[in-house]
Image 1 (tube, helix red, strand yellow):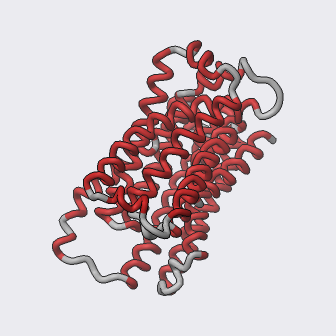
Image 2: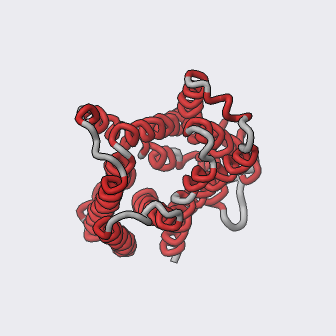
Length: 343
């Protein structure tokens, strides 16, 4: 029963994670670095630490009892994810949103789910449940690819063809996407390898939602690591490009509110995911990660429809998107079956 509740929680977390980016559609007078810098402060520092201090009694005492190597590993993996989010944006700039996003999410889905399973219980790969989960990974990647194809078809119909001068960017763009995907999967690894922090925190907790509360001690540290590269890169951009002036631009006062909302949705998605993964036991960071990623992609596509991104897209693009979404739903079903078989 706890595994089923965990999967439902991972779906809810994915819905939140697939929704926070839509806030950027109402901040059109700002550049990307403006909203991303504002978003990163509440999302990666303020909210995680408020929740952690509030929900984990004696938080800093907990950290003092955890081996320094575990704390350093969690922080550095979080910083690696932060670097990945920077490369993520660069990869989409070089290859385009559809192609770049497809490549990166496909690799993130596989790396973020497979590595914890191999580390925690490598023998499970050869069991029926493990094989089903691997099949789910492949189906999930295929679904991401189809969604990306839909985006590519849509963009091709709405924009001019790439010029010859832009084509040499593919090799460098593909390399950037590979780096971004591997680094971005580190947030799941930070949660996985930071488990001793949550276990130590549980000693100070009692009552319901212990896992949910204990995991906040992991997120606060990992996200603080992720904040540093985001802050440095976005801060560099706003200074170099002079876009810091946009923060006082007329008619953008509400953008500050939306940036905070965006951060709250993002932080909430990760905390719900952490609780969901814990409810699924040892396979949580494998099964939960796939469900989380899949639900996020589906929600992102739905927001694309609701906000008119696909309004003028050709029928072929709609068909590819539908095929991709069906594959992603199938992957969630397969993950559930695999988790059940592994017990």
